[in-house]
Structure formats: C-alpha cells, structure tokens
Amino acid sequence: MPSTAMTDSTDLAISFADVAAAAGRIAGVAHRTPVLTSATADALTGGRLLFKCENFQRTGAFKIRGAYNAIAQFTDAQRAAGVVAYSSGNHAQAIALAARLLGVKATIVMPMDAPAAKLEATRGYGGEVVLYDRYAEPPDAAVARVLDQRGGTYIPPFDHPHVMAGQGTLAKELIEEAGPLDLLVVPTSGGGLLSGCAVAAKTLSPGCRVVGIEPEAGNDAQQSLRSGSIVRIEPPKTIADGAQSRNVGQLTFPVMQRLVDDIDTVSDAQLVDAIRFFASRMKMLVEPTGCLAAAAVLSGTLDVRGLRVGVVVTGGNVDLARFATLVQPVAPAA
Image (cartoon, rainbow, N blue to C red; front, top):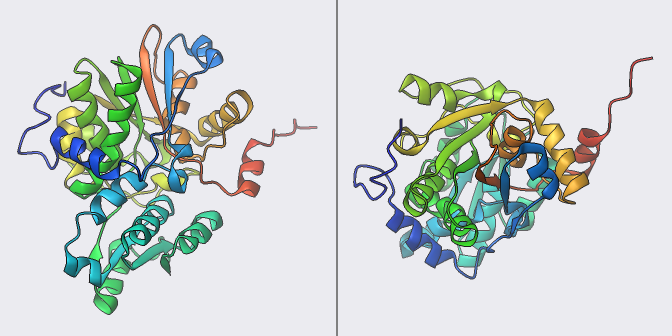
C-alpha cells in the first residue's frame, strides 16, 4: 500500500510546501472554484459526494493553476524568449492565458484533431498554434522542431514540478473547504493533477485514499502503477481527448507510486452517462475528460458507500455540437 506520509520528502519532485507556495502565486488569478453537492448523486451511490468543479475555472479547466505557477517563476531571459507547450486543448488554453497575463509570448503545439472550441480558444487567449498529427509522430518530436526553429522555454502539460504543484492547489482548496475526506477521485492522464492532488490530500487529510481514473482504452497509468515501471502505449481512441497521453511522467510516476492508492478505468459509455447526469441533474456542462472521476463513482466502479468523497471535475471545454451528439439518446432498434 502507498505510504500516507513523507509528502515533504526531498526525493519527490514536489512537496506540500511547493503546493502551498503555488497557492500563493495563483491567488487572485485562478478562481477558487465551487464545491457542489447532489442529493441525487448521494442517493445513487450511498456516499457523500463533494464535486470540485473546475469546469467553472478560468479557461474552463484546472490547467491555469499549473500553467500560471510555472510561467510566474520564469527568469527575465525566459520571459523574453517566450514559452512553448503542447496540448490537446486545456493546457494549451491555460498556457496562452497565463503567458498573456504575464507578458510572455506563447507558441502552442496542438494535434490536428483537437476540438475546434479548444483550438479557437487557445488562439483567442493569444497563443500561436502549430498543428501536428498525433498519430503520425509523437508530440515531443513536434515540440523539438518548434524549439529548434523558434527557441523558448518548454512547459510540458504534466511532467514539470511547477505544473504539478500548481495542480495540487485544487485538492488543497477542496479539503480546506469540505474538510477531511475518506477518498479523493482524480481524472488521470500524464499524472500532473493526480500527483499534485495526492501530495496535498495526504498532507491535509492523512487518512484519505487517492484513486486516479483514466479511460479503459488508455490505461497506461494503471499498468504502470501495478507493474512498478512506466508503461508506454499508442495514443488511445477515446472520447476523453484530454486523457490521450501515451505514458505518465518521469517526475509524476514516483509521486504516484508513493502516494496514490490505485488507478481504475471507465468506458466511454460510462463517460457519456456522467455527462448526461451533470447536464440533467446538476445543470452543468462537463467535457468527457472532466467526467472520468465522476463516471467511476456514479457507475459503481468505485464503491463509495458511507464515505466522504472528493470528486474532481476537471473541465467543461466541449464543442456544443459534440456535446449534443453525446447526450442524444440512442433510438431503439426497429
């Protein structure tokens, strides 16, 4: 079982002190998003669910936390050279906005099949978008090409200590507002959010179990945690476009090994059910990736009976046409 201690250990990429410092940097920039409840969800699951709603965050997702925390620590030379990032959308928007707020030029490498709304928003926040084919080449190759041509400082979407610490402020806020938790459930891709939240949760609520949730089509984090080494996969085909990473990070994985209790998965069909639940019962627009944790709880994949459960809702950036297609009931066969 993972240890619930040593969250200030120097052998990990971040400590709780880093999360606390990040909270100070992003104060007044990132929203302190609401923690919402649902009597229907509680009755359905038998638990007390506390939804941390980052779909109401600036740029529509949690990523502004880590992006701003990272760029805010640039040197003068780094600010002058600009920032480079890659993302399917939410990290892209966050880097673009954080860079604009801090007076830094941003170049964002994005996959050609990224949601149109995320591409448009990234450009709207002032980022210059460079497109690449995620199925033809790995993103690091595309990023290397841009860095060689333009220079700048690269901020990855998850495997960076300042990004990880910034994302951990989400769990810090949740526990400060809601009190101790029995379980914290976190959407998982490369592990930046999960590792940061695990550090905060194990410090502020030592008895809390931390479980990551990823798409069953791309369970590299689950395979990695259970095998004891990083497993790399091909880009998964899933509606959770923000969780299509090929592997967890070199910095995030040791934190996950130390502090995360388990990784579980959900199907695309379960994600659609969660999208519908949020829209119909809680009147919220949530993107598929943002529903990963909720889908695991609402579907019964995780047994939460009698538990106080923090459920991280990571974002709400979904094309309206796509959203309408996802929630449209399937007509019965003739």
